[in-house]
Amino acid sequence: MEIPQQYLRALVEISQQINSIKEPDELLDSILDIALQQLSAERGFILLKEKDNGGEYLPRAMRNIHSRQVSNVKDISHSTVQKVLQTAKPILTFDALSDERFDDSRSVIIQQIRSIACVPLLLRGEMLGVIYIDSRGQKARFSRQSLDFLQAFANQAAIALENARLMATLQQENALLKEEFHRIYAFKEIVGKSKSMERVFQLMGKVLNNNTTVLISGETGTGKEMVARAIHYNGARSKKPFVALNCGAIPENLIESELFGHKKGAFTGAVADKKGMIESAHGGTLFLDEVGELPLNLQVKLLRFLQERQFTPVGDIHPRNVDVRIIAATNRDLQESIREGRFREDLYYRLHVINIHIPPLRERKKDIPLLVQHFLKKYARNLEKSVQSFSAKALEILQSYDWPGNVRELENTIERAVVLSSEKEITENDLMLPDSAKEQSGIRAGMSLQEVSQILLQKTLDATEGNRTKTAEMLGVSLRWVHYKMKEWGLR
Image (tube, rainbow, N blue to C red; front, side, top):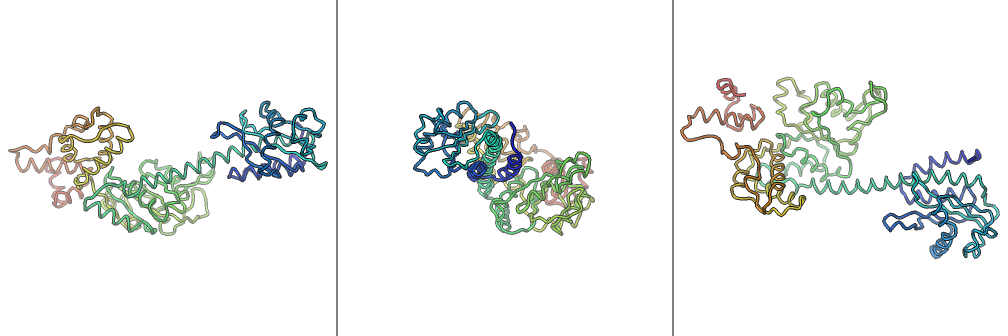
């Protein structure tokens, strides 16, 4: 196939033009207009296979063919288009009126059509449709070379069309996902009526529509990310990205690149420019989970970004501006980390503009029945099980257990119970909790005050993951007492 130089140049320009169009209908119009222009033809149409319509080929773009003349399109398809669809080979005629292949075509005779070109739209061997053009005049540039050009153009058009369709599908799916995110992370999905949760809801409502930096604190499993997402998807930035980075899950040598991005060649393995999460969140929210795990050198760079709202990718020398809201979360006592030299005090005050503390489940046991019913309905529906309730003993165990894993552990327990249950009522055997959950507190009659105090201190330390300050607050004693008794009794 030899294509003249003017056609080759046209193909390059056309390729750039059609690949910049992402909307399928606009792309189809452009493809047809280019084909008509390049061959000086007068009329044309594109037929496409409609997968949602039984695989029928339907007109999707037409030029100089009125909607009342669609029957002519179908008439032409019997004589020309049908052959192209069946053989996947292009058809060209310079004089349709004397070409025996078109003797049965009423439209060729009635419309006095002289020149016809029809080429298949093929992608990886699959027939997507056809491009048809014709002309009644003498000026049309129909030749074997023009047919080769039209076929090469059709191959490019098929790729561009498939890309546009995939892009449209992705945009539709993205819109649906955003709607689902908005539904999932609405306040109604954060269950709780205790006074401590009421304070959480009040603070969330106050920070929705401003850019104030928020620090969410709470133990593992309390739902910090869910609160962050609820703030984002119910606030002024809901239509922009929500980007989450777990600062404790990325190796120290990679986290700077993940956060700020890098330039090609900035380090071994940087084979291309990479956009960092800060830049990806432009206009929206960047959620820094477990911010207390950030290495000290990264804390300095994060502080600079919070102060100046500028960042520089690794290996670059030009700072960039972004509009990003920062919501951070931690399960650590950051003030204790400051005292231990593991967290910068100036960064702490930059993050700690508004603090939303999510209480552990053991401190809001009034919410456990609500959460239990919420998760029961959710998983009974998702797993298509007929489970409807809990036995009295199962409920007693659920409410007496301390839930070291908090809401996450409770949710996993209810999901597991729904899966295992073969009856309409969940029993204590379906819960599969540790034996300690069924043993009350482990304190027995006749124990000494020291023994009771030792058990209580150890259980509280376990529940707070060794946080001595939190343990002292929960027990109503001084931090000094906790240190002293831990050493005296040899507690971990």
